[in-house]
Length: 112
Length: 112
Image (cartoon, rainbow over all chains, first blue to last red; front, side, top):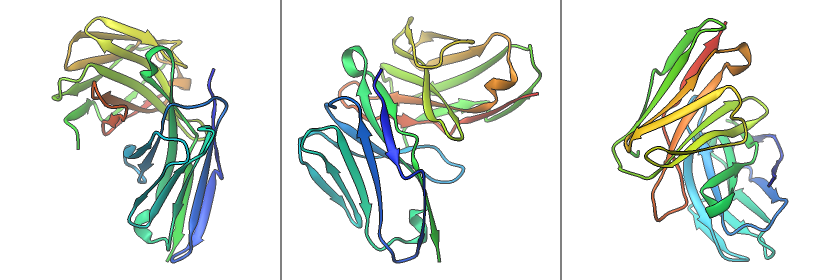
């Protein structure tokens, strides 16, 4: 089945430093989604990328979808303590693409 | 947040007992999902539903069954709970015309 690998598993940064997490799929994806889960909370949808080479920004967050539509990245500029949490990428799979395969996530800790 | 609730929010049970978790939505969405989340494994799909009485297995369905007799309710049953089923269980819903999923608050299940 489809596999979605995400690195790094953990990242500790000083507040104000940048942070990047990478996502790689074993198959070409029709789209890729990113979710954030705060400690003790539930995953929350952040964004979806659809087009090859697409770049989207949400304030300090920049999301990229690779040209081959098999990889993606999330970059946070000047991290803040509010960025703490686990970031997951997810790609659709299965007949009709109703299902999502999630990466294992990158847990971000921000040291104030 | 999307209109999705889970009950109970916390449960402690003993090995061998049956357990049923409920997911309730007020959005009238067709697609509903059950995931489990364990450290080091991320989110793994247990079962999903694409309509009333229409369900299918996910990646880790062994030991679990589901039922959906109404659009708004999706039940997850552990027929005979085992300690390996200790986990946090999330329900999610997906709008018919969009790919993103919206998660419920989760149920923390402990099987002793």
